Image (cartoon, rainbow, N blue to C red; front, side):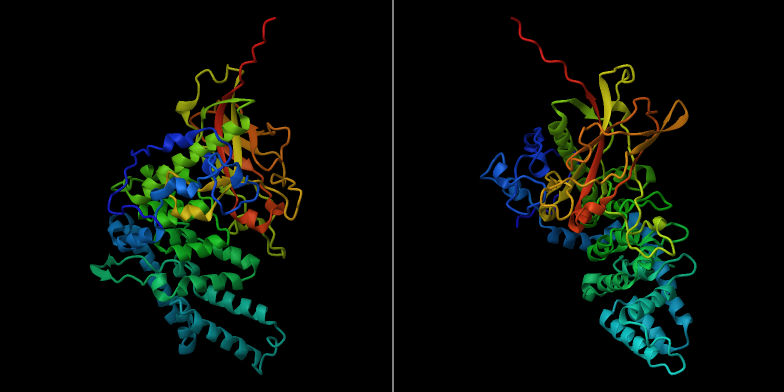
Amino acid sequence: MYTTDINTPPIIEAKDPTADKLAATIGFGVAATGIYDKIPEIQGCRSDEASVFPDVTYSEYVGERRINWREEFEETFANERNQYHRMRMDWESIGAHRRRLRAKVNKISKNKWIRDFLHLFLDGKIMKAWKRVRIVQRVLREREDDTSYRNIGNTAMLEMVIQTVVQMLIEPEEGFNLLMYLTTHSFPECVLNDKIEPAAPACFHRKHGDCMLAELILNSLPALPQRRLLAHSTISTRMRAIHFAACAGNPCQLDVLLKFNVNPNYIDATGRSPIQYAVVRNHSIIARQLMWHGADLTLFDSLRQLKYEPLPEQTRAFVFIAERYRALERAMCSWVKAFCGRKWKVITPVSSLHSTRLALYADSIESFSETKSSSKPSVRPRLISLSLRTECFDANLEKNADQLVLVFAIPLMFSPYDAAMPALYPHVLRTKLVIDNDYLGTPAQILSKDPMIRFHSSGREQTHDLPSIFQEVHNGFVYGWQIPKNIDRKTTPVLSLPLDPSQLSSTMEKHAILFVQAYSVVLPPPPKQKSE
């Protein structure tokens, strides 16, 4: 595998000399370049035989620009403490949470066996903890004074024991729980009361006991308690486990949470999302993981408003997200032009590029009730705040009847090859959303009804339904809606998408991402008639 020079800091203004060659309006191929790789094959994509250059794969085209993510992670981990000046408040707060939770264990019970049992969970010793769980199950079944446990099955007994452990290991002051503890084992040493607190060993230095134990706990819980645990947040900062993993965890610990479809765009009380923690921490691997699972890359731009000193604009993670955002926006514009070039002339994007997963977020438990036994939540609208670019709006937009503002949504997938791709060369392909086990490729109906948009106009809030601009609404490839032109440019309109991925396969639902962006378009001039 090719590697880059990790000693040379990247520069945002640097422009790849071949980037302009990939900006052609091509509606297929990896990142809209017209070039494919032999594998992986993604449903709904053309075969590699349709490539513009059949003898060249996309990986060969990228060539020596490919990166070695293992070396990148090793360098990031070795230089973690260099980010202490930006992460000091967060890391010291996490250290205080961890110490209070460990101190609580010593006050829970006078029984040393119980205290040691709980410490095994905090220490990530999964094998010893599992053995004691089995001992607890056996003791409960063999109790002579209470025979109610004898008829409980193994699964129900395991759920009961794990739920009891989770309820016992919650910090009373801030609500810092066991799952948050297991995802924050690798923060560097920090200064506390003029003393240096030693760094906790990283998860991969402890045989991945922390991440495996976190996955065991989540898999052992039934649907509703599992979602409550994932959605649990601290009292003052409203941080969830995914924020702690992005702030002070390892990629393996974050991957466990992402497996359970947590919301990567949830914003805490300080106004930060998980990808913002990853960028400030300068952890590009974690930033990649969040991007692959639908994190909105536009959120990193608000770091300038959070007044970090100094700003992380020349760090590896910040440069990667900035360049990757430009590359994805270029590909999105190419796809839109390829789909709609005959009917509309695309002028320019008038909003930022937003992304969201099709899968329903497991930590959105508002649609679950105490009596609901089904693990399938009801359809809830996905809210997307369209960040408008006021400088792209024409001053005479409202008076020009031929100029429209259209919002396009295109489903796509990141392939496993993207782990080795540089920022300017994303390995992303369009995909077709089809019904599961439908051999005819019938498009799935992912929208239960027409979307809605909420915006301000003339000082008043308005809500409009958005009918589709396409005759075939559920075509599986592209979705579009026309939004009103009288939106107040200084406000942020909110697009409500009633996503329903129930017809999709589990693989498609888990990995498909919807890219959403608004464009200014005009109707093309009528064709000239030939004179007699």
